[in-house]
Image 1 (tube, rainbow, N blue to C red):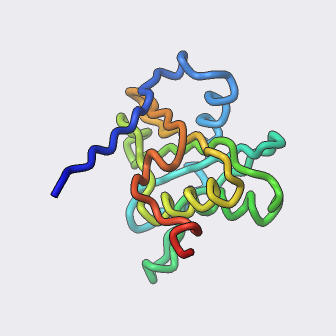
Image 2 (image 1 turned 45 degrees about the vertical axis):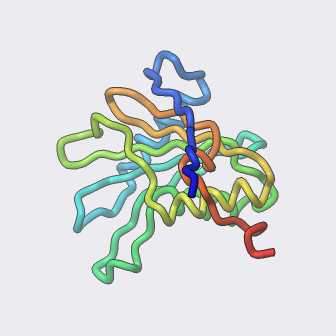
Image 3 (image 1 turned 60 degrees about the vertical axis):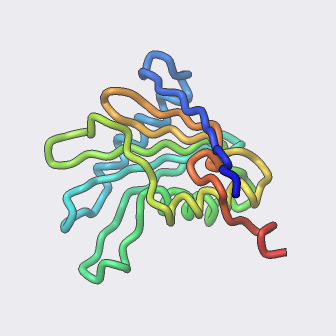
Length: 159
């Protein structure tokens, strides 16, 4: 037996250290939390995706009393972008969250299902998707979804 080490590097930035486009996308994700329907959890998540042609689509989590029927902010943004501009790769995805007390101090991270959908976008277009995860104390800037989901499962695994 041998051990395998998987190492990833994630930047932890302040808003001032980000580019104008990155700050803009994060602000759109923060604003999108206002569109959340989080009647049960009171956990409001917003996401914004930028496509390679510059278009931006937002998403917000949507809950339902039949809990499996809800959908996360990341997937609502991705699916909206793909439904409206299916030929455009996603270049960057930003995520922000708040509760009843306001924005979270620490960056929110996507659930496993969202990570898989995000990974599929990288695989589909053969292009890394930068991920920005917002928290008041700092932002995680991740260069590729693969860094959020090591040992990932994509189309090539089925061949």
